Each structure stands twice: as C-alpha cells, then as structure tokens.
Image (cartoon, rainbow, N blue to C red; front, side):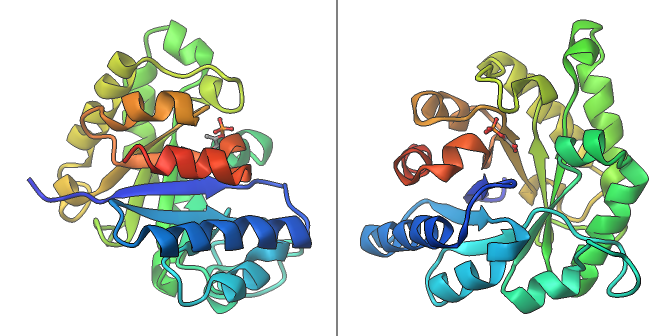
Length: 250
Ligand code: PEP
C-alpha cells in the first residue's frame, strides 16, 4: 500500500482582501516553518486577486498556493475567466475544479470538469477534482452511484496520482455545520478508491480528501478514517488557529 501524505487544503472562496489574506498566509507559513517536519502538506487557495501576492509572500516556504477554478483554454476571449497557465504564472501549484458551488452556480458538468482538469495538467498543475452528492440524492440512497459517476466522468485521460487529487464533499455538508458520519465517509471513500481502479494511474496512491464543515473538533475523527487522505476546508480555513488545528490532527 503506497504511503499517502495527507493534504490539508484551504478554499478561501470569495473571501479576503489584500491585508487580511497576506496576514493569514504569512501566519500559516510561519507556523509551518516553526513546526519543522510535519505529517501533512498544506495548501491555500485564495481568490484570484490574492494569488500572486500570497504566492510571493510564502515563496520558499512549504505552504503551497492554488486557484479555485480554471478555464479549459490557455488564453482567448473569455471575459472574467482565468487559465491554468495564468495560475501557474501567478505562483500556483494546484487548482480546484468541479467544486459543488461551480457545478451548481455555473452549471458545470462532469465533462467540463474533466476538460478543466486536463487543462490544469497540461499547464503543470495538480487538479483537485471535487465530487459529492446532494441531500436529495443521499436520502434517495443514490450517494455511492452519484459520486462514482462523477469520479468516472470528471477524471481526464493521463491523470495519475501525481497530478490529481479527489475531494469528496457532500453538498449538504458544505458550509452548513453538518458533517458526514465517519461510517458514511468510510463507505464513500472506499467506493471512490474502488472507482479509481482502471481510470487513473496508480489509483492506490491518489489522495482522496474529505470536505464539508471540517473543523478542529471533528478533524481527528475524520482524518483517522480509512482512505481519508486529508481535508478540503472552507470556512475554517479563514481562521489560522482553526486551519492549523485541523492540520495538527494529521
Ligand atoms: C468547501 O467549500 O470546500 C468546504 C468544504 O466548505 P466548508 O468547510 O465551509 O464546509
């Protein structure tokens, strides 16, 4: 069984002005430096306006920087969009694609998510591909099928464990304070792992993150679940003590 180093990723969403964003990222990078050897990788995904200043502020430290979305094309007439090459140019190593807020608010489907992940790979980024069922789908007993179908449809060709991370984020748990039970998380993560076989290079080495109201008080239990290889954190990633507290459970 390959060693999978945990990844603690913060999705700042549409939050953070310049001073506060820099302060948060600098605080985290200092904590990482002071901690020395840690058992996790740490990533922050600021809004597009802050990617470059944050990347500059934490350059040379282990804190990685990512984007929250990218376009499928490297450049062109796409007002308001940002390309994977631009994210790399601004200092990113990662990009989130297929977040449920993109799928719901921007009508993104699996094929588009796969194309975005392929664009990320072509630019040299690691794609964090998000999947997750709605409450209605869970209550209808469809969670495993929905998530497996999203995983299968959202992974592009030439994806492997080095360039791809999967994030399981039940939609009903995002920003709601509701967290999936350990048993539910274990069931879905094992199913995602099984779904990866034959669809991605080195499937056992692919990191599968859990996301959905992760906080310091529930992180230890969630991070101990089989096939949970880290967390994608929204709200709690905006508070240095909370984000660091989550990481420290790894
Ligand atoms: C997210 O948006 O990816 C997320 C998991 O948010 P929160 O932690 O706030 O539920």
